[in-house]
Image 1: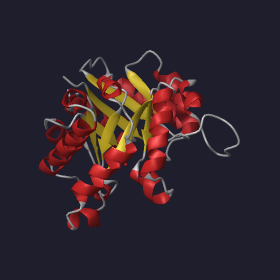
Image 2: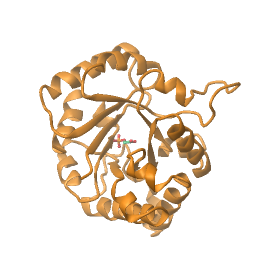
Image 3: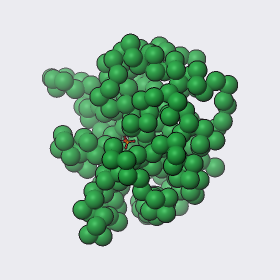
Image 4: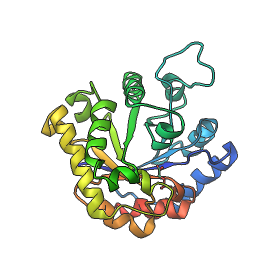
Amino acid sequence: MRKKIVAGNWKMNKSAAEARELVAAINAELGDCECPVEVVVCPPFTAIESAGTALAGSRIALGAQNMSERSAGAFTGEVSASMLTSLGVKYVILGHSERRTLYGETDAIVNAKVRAAINAGLNPIVCVGETLQERETGAMDDVVTRQVQQSLAGVTGDELKAGKVVVAYEPVWAIGTGKTASKEQAQEMHALVRRVLAEMTSGIAAAAVRIQYGGSMKPENAAELLAMPDIDGGLIGGAALQADSFVAIIKAGC
Ligand code: PGA
């Protein structure tokens, strides 16, 4: 039985002080809810420490939105995996479509980051997903298959069984657009991701991997998406910036 995981991707939003307030508000809104859903917030680098202080002792785990594939050295502007773990970070989003399209991240770069994250004891949330054009031309299966195979190349069945990797299926056409994949469309792609992982490792290993849906997930559509057999959580952008909508999504997964 896979434990659902709902993560907030705050993107380039929230100062250190605002992060503290949002975490406090999420905790207040969660109240004594003990439903078996893992909750993660991924603030920008500059707010990780204050968010970490605010969530100490709560059920919320800390995540980051990116990291370098290198461990240290002359890489101006970069942040390493061990810098993140030193702040208590447990998860790191890698290969988000905004990183892929706006900052030129290739599957090979994402794969190097996945390796560096796992080696440092961080759990990558690896994003895959097709563009609107790729969906309309029927290329989505090939695109997502290639992204999974190449971004996760070398990841072992044991690593998957140990829960070290989360995959997020995020159709690019649904991110920040208000358009959500239907529950059937999402389920189909999640099942595809799991089949590809099974071919790369084993059926047992693939069955252990949590696959999140991302792309305009909100309180209104979360319950039906989270009820699908291969949808194990959500990666939430816009709706994660307010405590009430973020917590409503978490509770939809309970
Ligand atoms: P959205 O973003 O929920 O605002 O569509 C999701 C994401 O980009 O991870």
